[in-house]
Image 1: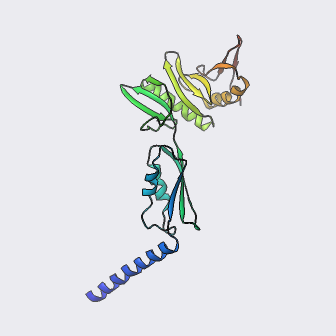
Image 2: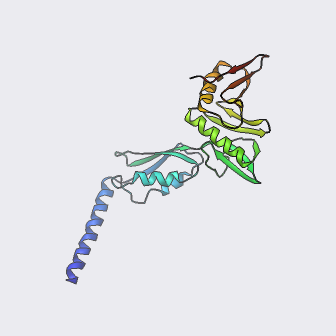
Length: 222
């Protein structure tokens, strides 16, 4: 009985090794290419693929999870070339928008609220904030993202509100900013190329402070 069990176990091991060898030699991973990475270390992506990996057994979801565990990585795509054996990992990186001092501690945040280990070469003004202001900024960034509008940076904060750059244009806000307000801002900014600042501090309104003497108050549209 014991001999039969040992023989069966040995056969199973040999069979498993044979399958692994066949899959590897048939469709081996010959290389790992990383695209879109600037701050994310490419070596991490290569190390995430096991030695002697095969395209047949490569676990794409596990590979994506490993790459996405790095704070710089916001999105990951994996493409396999069955002719060359090369696995291409496309990385979408987070971009810092806030360099802040909060309760004596420096934090650097992306627009989705992820704390980053550094500026990644970005040039941001250091802003002193309290926790409530950080919450306002993150909510504002979330509303912008949902509306398809990009927060470039947070540039200052004070009693008058929080100053930011949105789609390359200066904006000031405080408190809650609604989606209708942001959608109106998106439409209004191209109409006022000379505006000095777009003021979102009044609920449900976008106030355009133009370089010229006149000002335009606009209700959100839609």
